[in-house]
Length: 164
Image (cartoon, rainbow, N blue to C red; front, side, top):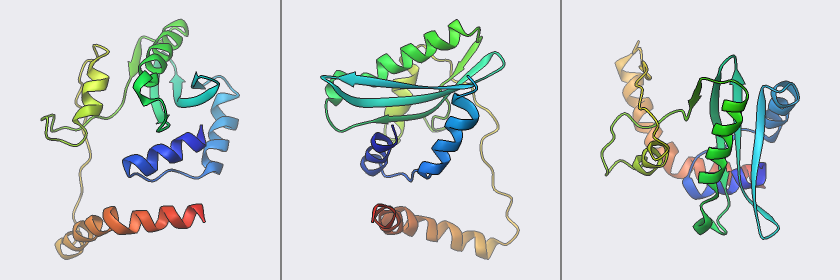
């Protein structure tokens, strides 16, 4: 799963938590039945994986990964359906696909993610969201400027360093 997750991160330009983090998740949640790893196999190779959590009567889709090979067979649809059935079998009354962008226009880079989740007849629920409490406008503006730089080159540098 972790190998496929790093492929996904490289392709979709996001950072991945450490392997040790996922080992801890496994030890603390999967082995206690509070989470489950789902893997999709095609022609003898794992091509996608997901991780779901259960707490009480609610289930959450937490992590998803897909390889660059055989994307045309769309394994994530089957994985999501399998997780929904698993959650229902565990007595869950809610399955949370988790975050989608608040601006749901087709030009939003995450619109495809929204469309994928909405394809399961998911109900869009808006929670509080993320808000910044600004103590220093100067540093806040500097942070926002640097975030753009980080998203570009620094992320790629850190990812390459992590691999090396």
